[in-house]
Length: 390
Image (cartoon, rainbow, N blue to C red):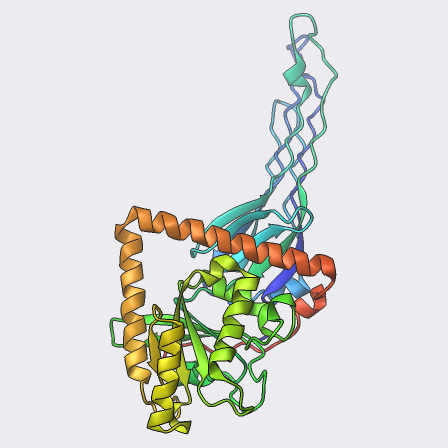
């Protein structure tokens, strides 16, 4: 199956049915009077979040959706049937944006959540509506009104508890494959990861959390360089960012400078997203001796004293379990605070809105500058199996 995380669709609500011009004509009923009924209301177009979907690929082949038209009214004051509402299934985590005004219409973040995106046209009135003491035989009716027509941009943002951040070949895909059932491609060349992937990390039979991996970032990523910027919005719904830093880069670069570069690109892309809690993990620790590793840890603790720092090796497994346990505790604590502390939940909601605004502003800027075409944003890529190990 293809993984498509952005799509443009046209939605057209049904038009209202026209009112009926009719007069009652029955034997032994003189001057029966007007009895034309109203038309039916046009059908809406409604998006509904479906947990069984994980890609927007269907909208590439079916980009137009219409609500049913209202039926005409008829004699004997019979109202026409309303048009059928068109229910359009989208993945959970889909943001809906008006493609013309770039206004965010809503976010579908819960299974079964619905969002009306096009209202059906108002029904027409039959001539019985216009009867009065001075006009007992009206011949006036009104036609139904057309339904709303909108071009929508759908953006899928993966829902995850922990988001992985780092340069290409920092070990993100290796880590997620080591701690979950996700099997992204792992190789020794830059930009091995071409698509975001999710993995369910099971700590024990009662505790688990979702981890998201996106393509690596490089210098200039916030301006459109590389691949990661196309998928940075997938980190916008994560509440904890895990920044992986290669402790022994093959190009001989300084790990601390690499960390500064990535964090700078993140801030340039979304200052609100960069204000999230960020954890640090030095990867590939098996390539350094103990003295080199300790010196590197001192540098990072001096530069980022308030950030949790872990040293791991996905090859040997060193430090992996400690990192997973700590992340699980963090995720559980956040979930508990969201449920029990209204002030914390409100602050999180405001931060999420600020991040969404930054993501939308960045997309609008890149779209206006022509940095990325719609075709590039909806390229064919492979979906990753994220089922938990049984």
